[in-house]
View 1 (cartoon, rainbow, N blue to C red):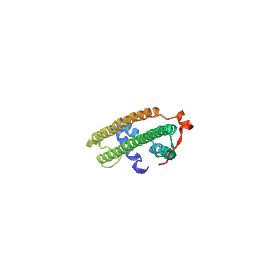
View 2: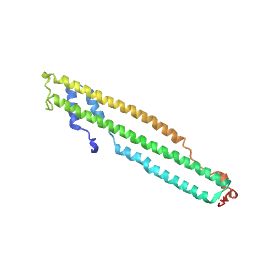
View 3: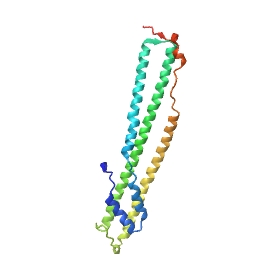
View 4: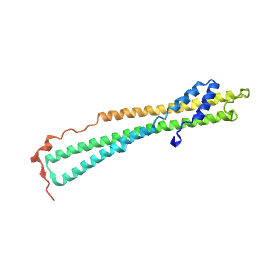
Length: 217
């Protein structure tokens, strides 16, 4: 896998082997959990980009069209109906601005979540590699050996316990951050539910006699 995110199978097997030799099931369980942490970050990125810039671009284009329309109308028209219609266009622009901010927020939330998971996974597989290297160093670089008469098994148990603590801390920190993201997501949902989109042009804007040709200076 690109970007240094490939799971370190050989190093993981070293940890699992010595976790079984030292009766340390927690270390093996941690390795198995890390294996599934990464998921499919490319899918999350695709969905984030669907919100921003893809969907947001459509909102920007629509708002720019309305702004251009307002400018053109202002050149030629005035009167109560014109004022009413311009106010209506202003409310539509406000809805576009709110939708624009909402889409940016959703995109940022998904990207931040992906980065948190990816960086936690990256740190965890680094811990797997470091722990496996420390174990092999402790046994003289010969996989499968456990010269217990030198007390090496005790040292390996200490290394495995350190590994478990390290990765568990990473996991807890990531869970705390993801929980905060969840709260942000709920707030975005509330904003989406409160999004006000004008559905009808006011009747006052349709009174033909209230549209007047703007007097040129």
